[in-house]
Image (cartoon, rainbow, N blue to C red; front, side, top):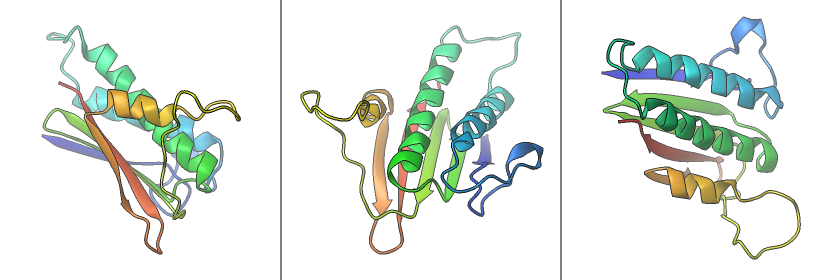
Length: 149
């Protein structure tokens, strides 16, 4: 069984909940995306009669990876044009499209300077795989796959 959701992005994708269309790069897109993902995960999760004790941990990982990708698009690329969420075959695939040509680059632990910047290290550690598609004149899409089962 597959389930999809277009997270509210304000950039021409699915409309945001409650009629809030938002704007590309607006700070609320991360929270709206998280709420959309929570709804999606609960819709495809096991019934209360047969709960998986590790499910909450896997959902937390999915939320963290998704939040990091959307936050990076907001912080470094002008905001997402589109956020896609697909649950299929026991895995979540998150895609975040943005207009920037700049490819994400994980920081090394010994780099100094601006606070933060280590989100991709978390994505790399927690996701089954992640990568970048495009980046040649029309923006890029960063994706990550998180195992849910």
